[in-house]
Image (cartoon, rainbow, N blue to C red; front, side, top):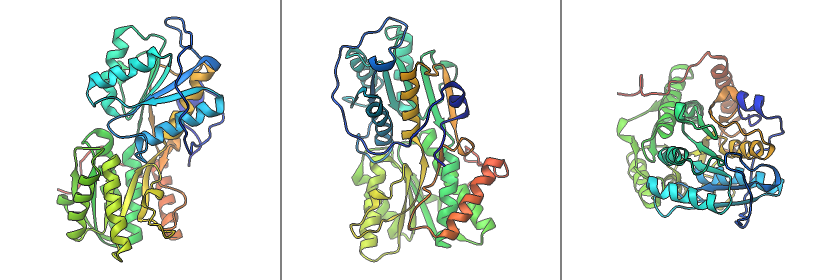
Length: 368
């Protein structure tokens, strides 16, 4: 499932893509040279990343992006670094981008929808015409500058697959959702998950309840304690599985699921963005993660670094990745899902690819 970035990117770059895993920070250094309006490529390229409100080790979106950037940099022998802004305002993000640029970085990845205004501001300034910018989880549309790539996913499709897997595997019970900030990517995960559960109820004989009160947005991607509190309330009310799409806040949900499983309760969490099986490691060779709704962030970041290095960076492009481009799904291996469940999920995924199932990217038709 993790083979290509997108058909458009394939047409623009010819290279072998390797799924990114592991990360180690290399030291930042200035000294690259660039001509205004012409981005530095090849061995002179320095690649950077600005984190969002989470941390580089959030085991989610920030970490996935950094792993892709850093893996490519290591393979190509490039200098790479990341920078965490002082805050979460547009000004903070813009300052961080300029700081990296001033140090000589000519490729900067920005993981998240919240960078949109900062990206637009940097583009409009005209001060960084040789800077290759990447924003994930955003479709800039006509606002995508000639040296910027915006990448978005059909999160509703991976959410749908995770919902089907959850329902088919537990058969009966109740599920909930804890999101971070209520932005499009998080909403689509939620909507897709609910559609997937409903599809399983209608087609595979499952009986899963979805109480609207158990589908909430925390308003944060970095509040571990809040995630734990929300999970505690849901599990206490009888919820069996919580889909956590909330970055560091979601780790709080996972930690609560972990504690309860260690205490003998049959509850689960569903991870997001990356395979979060290891995040739910209970120290006994088992995990509280039933499955994860993934989008291959690290792969996208990895491929775009290579494109920048090769001089084939597809600036001015809005990429939309989905099941049909093999850029999302659930983990192909997970001890907590049965072989029968995995077979059903594979069939459902193929139906999405074939257009037999259309997963909506909005709230229409969901629980009232």
